[in-house]
Length: 50
Image (cartoon, rainbow, N blue to C red; front, top):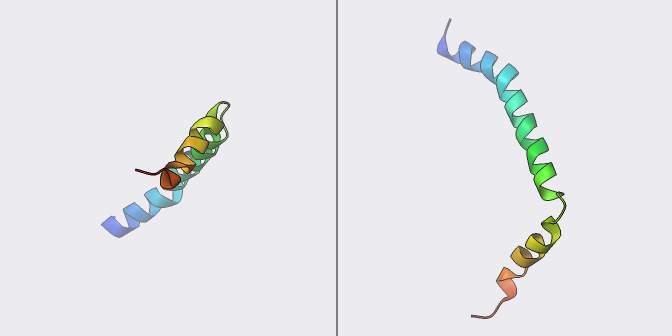
């Protein structure tokens, strides 16, 4: 089996699953309880004066 074909089969199966799980994890991390205060703090960093 050629390298390209093997990588293509991997990306079509496990790669897609890994990307989907990563996406779901980011969504859960973003909307977790208690995350609003840290998100507000991070959003105000550019506006803080030195």
